[in-house]
Length: 334
Image (cartoon, rainbow, N blue to C red; front, side, top):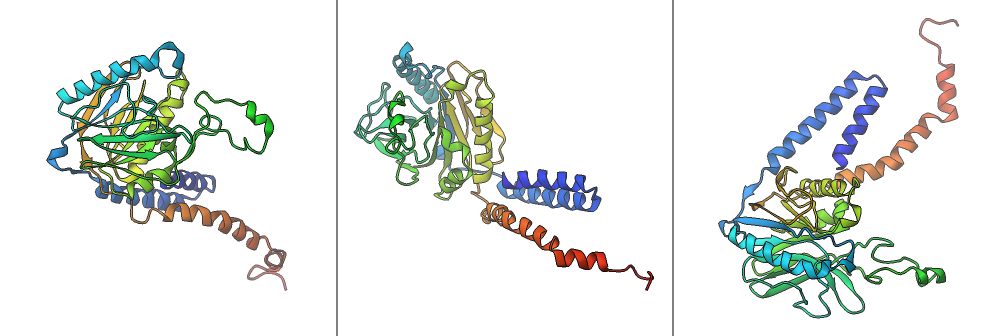
């Protein structure tokens, strides 16, 4: 995303300065970079034993917990599991918020845990502290990874211990705690990089998960509060960026949507329409991983924050300005 943003900015600066050479250089450099990336990012078929991956959309509105949605989620998930099994999927990704697992592993779930396919899903665990977590299970082997970046005033209230009036600010599920460290899911023969809902908005989290060499990235989301707004499309677009940056296939599951499977190129392999129970399936591909020098992009951005103002200050120095004004053109008056 840094490369795309820098290209757009450079093109507009070149147009503003009426610099055809600068515009041509910018477009040429961006074109070469994108061509090289596309050559590198071509996904390779993964092991035949992991032929298909699926994403399940229960079609249950989880934004209103008192309308019986928690009782409806179990049968909807059971139906998705059965459909994924019939489709031959080896692993099924389900949304966030479909279980409150208690303090034990395995967690409590309102749906059956099958022998096949393997499952990845999101929910809460713990009885104080309480975590928003990603769970993975295959062949009776469990793995859990806690969400490390929480939504302010959505999942916790900052400064509650310092400002007494914030004690009156109540969250439906109470304050959640962030995980101490970012972890991947390791269960059975699977290695999955989980991004729980809001975490998919952050490039650094996707890259850090990709550095753990997962089979794919999994985004477990619940966007039901934002129906009839641009938010679901914005969140889905962010997931596509994470796939490109990480050089990894990404599987996204939402309770109502958007549910999709994204190739390492950012192309959508399979997508479910918004709302209603849906299952999408696609071949699992192993991407090449993140660009080896990806750190150069944010480093260049940070350095420019210092370098550009410093260069302007150097150009505007009084001594330099007066020397330019005092310079006489060649052949001028003596």
